[in-house]
Length: 474
Image 1: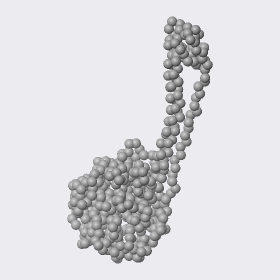
Image 2 (image 1 turned 60 degrees about the vertical axis):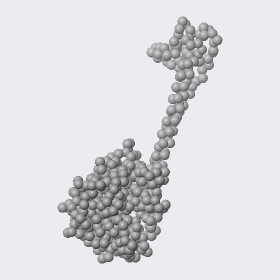
Image 3 (image 1 turned 180 degrees about the horizontal axis):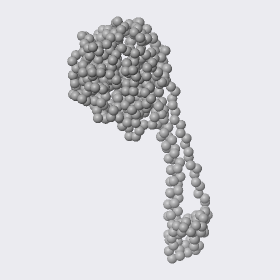
Image 4 (image 1 turned 90 degrees about the horizontal axis):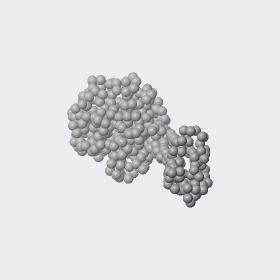
């Protein structure tokens, strides 16, 4: 993640094989039209009650004795013995040759008539009300999530115990810090939880962004403030092992929800590996006239190499990096500020011997540099990796860069000192505990998936972590 305070860059920059194109008015090309669901509403025609003339007798003994065959209600029933017997038993109880209960309506005891009429009217009301109610309810759901992927959420919503995590944070137009966490449900649907600063709680803000492959990696970036209004870019891997992206152009909560649109197919030079991780960041240039801002995306390709793409007005440009990661390595991607005019792109990954290492793009020499021969430290096999910048000096130099990785003894914490530009000795944090997957954001908050629950932490001072609470995922 990138600290939102203070990056200062030069007017002209070149990556060795990356092209950064000035794009002060770039409009992302991947905003699709809204998907709409349409359902037909079928209302059953009402039945009609035939009016039946009835004579009222002041003396019940004057009423003619009715049999099931000449009863006004039974006249439409075929003279089948079983039917007429049943019908007669229901409505023609007699006592001493006269109708029990006195007065009748349409030849039926008054009490029985009113009960039958009430039941009929209730059934007619249900026939009309139920389809209309379902249509209205469905319409509300569609309007809230038609921009996603037309994916119906499961009920109840449950986070997958093997879900990856992604997180972003930014100051909105009112100066309020916004937090988002992205995760995958047991039904493989990607969802968003948001911190509601007004209500002071976490809430499920999007229950169906889109479908990804099981155990898909996730990467999230918020762009701004130089390209206001803010936009969220969310990436995952599809069931066919392609990179998919969703875009939210209005990330501030509206009625407690956000809406995402699906982006177009991303076609990198080399296909992603089946077990690739994803990492992304926004390369800002806040005080550099003419410098571009660009989305950076990192993945591991089928050859095992690291591929880095940057989004320009001409589309994605891809480069293969000289690195030797272990297949299925965790990935983290950051931009360090090295002063007013330079910055380094830092990529963290795992070697085959389970050491954590980094490859850097040096903003001074414009060259890629690897420190695989001088790794950062040992981490657990198949570790999830996340990183963020913490603080900056008055001249815009990143004070510290924190790299987290999962482990059986807790979460490993490695810190890069911006003054000495070296990593210190890594330590395990018992406060962060043992997590299945990790995510961090620009406000120095960390999130870990522990036994099906997303835990939130924040850093108070180097290695001094505190628990914030749980993130709502249902």
